[in-house]
Amino acid sequence: MSDAAPIVFRGRVLVIAGSDSGGGAGIQADIKTVTALGGYAATAITAVTVQNTLGVTGVHPIPLEVIAAQARAVLDDIGADAIKTGMLGDVGVVETVAAAIDHAGQIPVVVDPVMIAKGGAPLLAEAAIGAMKSLMIPRAALLTPNAPEAAALTGLSVETTDDLRRAGEALLTLGAKAVLMKGGHVPGERVVDVLMTAEGETTFEGERIETRHTHGTGCTLASACATGLAQGLSLNEAVARAWNYVHEAMLRAPGFGAGHGPLDHGWTLRR
Image 1 (tube, rainbow, N blue to C red):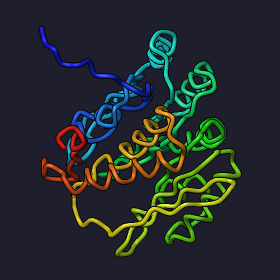
Image 2: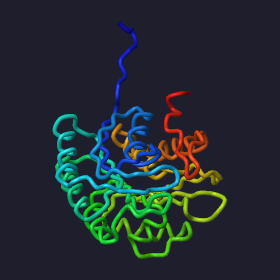
Image 3: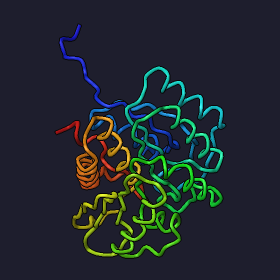
Image 4: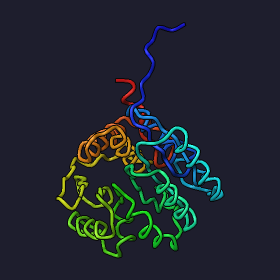
């Protein structure tokens, strides 16, 4: 028998999102991230995608009753200290997930409004944007849109850091408790993300990493934030740790694939 001390998991995160067969984004990236940061990940899968670093070639939705049953099975037994949502797909899934969040009770929810895959494939039906705005944003302790997603949700042009702030204010008005406006799509030598709440803002800034290995950065950042909140960190602490984790994971990317490659989610485990 081993004398090794048992691993202590701190922070249970229920991830409700799609599966990525390439392992770089979606549920796979979420599980790796939560685990690497010392949390425990459970899942409710919304869709099975066929994809690799070159793109998405198939999306196979999970029946709504199965999505609901997965979430309820986790919540009624294991429980959760935070929920993270990713790819939802259509109106029916958004409605199902909103009901699951209500069943979970008063725990923080991080909503990553996934709309388009890194390779350009649509992951949220246009008809579901309204449901995202009315059902998911008001339930979000933290919303994590990139510039194109912020533009789609607000109808505003989002091309500069000031545009990010304007869109962030609009998203706070829609009911999000906090928004992390991601600046990766905004041109410039430096990347500026803006965390906004009703009390003010905090910026996270660094030099742009010139790399093709960016697959799953949004999923990873949101899951890292959810893990921090599940572990009792303050919002600013959770986002700061998540931001640094993703930055290092990009720098250490393993170089897999011929397209948008994955990050090194496990770098914290090899320090």
